[in-house]
Image (cartoon, rainbow, N blue to C red; front, side, top):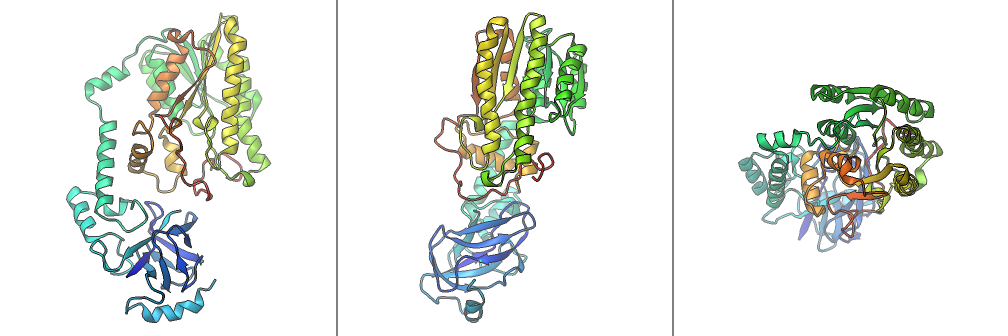
Length: 460
């Protein structure tokens, strides 16, 4: 039996790629899982593994030539030299030319019931039955990711359909439930809060939730600000709010932030240290400049801001500090050594600072969120979509969903309220059971194509 190897789709937006290197030559035995070739796209260069075992009997594309996703680029066979009659002349031609090449190489039996022959470079790699089902369900076949690197089959379409249903169910709320969610619980009535990194994502939702529960809020931001619109929402709730910009690389601006916030609010009761930059890079590739930037923004600025704010709190009888860390501070993930170090530092100083300040009336606790889907995922992860997030988290996280920014915001509000006065020095892991599971990371051998930190970290 022979097997077509087709150009895989390495991301939902990928339309074509070029084989820049073959790791096997014609005539070699290829085992399932072996790196077969390296593909280059406009965004990245990635190793591609074979999903089948067999002899590499034919290579049908030139090195460096771009071809469409789904194009047949090579052929495997159960026997050496076994190719289809149409491919036979190509085998001899390419054998000498390609002696020199985790996504997965798609290999399907050339004559199986679920396969379809290549019909040209514009064809997408999907079986006829998969196409028919996708049409019936109203799904764009090109948005369906094959589960194991092969061309799309019926089961992939069903899986995509189920993921979309689950996503819609999780995000849909009745009008009454929305009203209940937005209604203030008054747990923070009269409090004065400073939230850092409040321009986007988790920080923005924390600022809104604190206002819903009765607090006036100062929203800090560093770059592109969604803080202004959040502040306007807070004012419409009848709370006081303002935004203050501060560069966390500059300690003078950090300390000025504390003073300006206290001046506007008339003191500070609650500090939520949310600001930080997510960053991934292989350990051996991290530069001194990147190290200094990440530690300065993620830890040094928070440390000295908290120092100034605690001085303000002590003058008025105390307060509460909630630090945002991460499950990266308690679990290992490849390429996050620097980021994890800053988050581990936050956990350690939270615990120590808490026991130093508790008897003085200042409580310090922390939250270690897991996967919370925010805008940064769509910028940093190639081909990332809400459908991918829903399918992946449903499969990999015990809670069967990604976290929401509101999940974090409500916990932060509790930590800063009078309902948690006996909670001191704790880091609460909020990850849907991720860290309780043995492992979330499956591929720890290859460098990631993700680029967190782009636009923030020098050289990223």
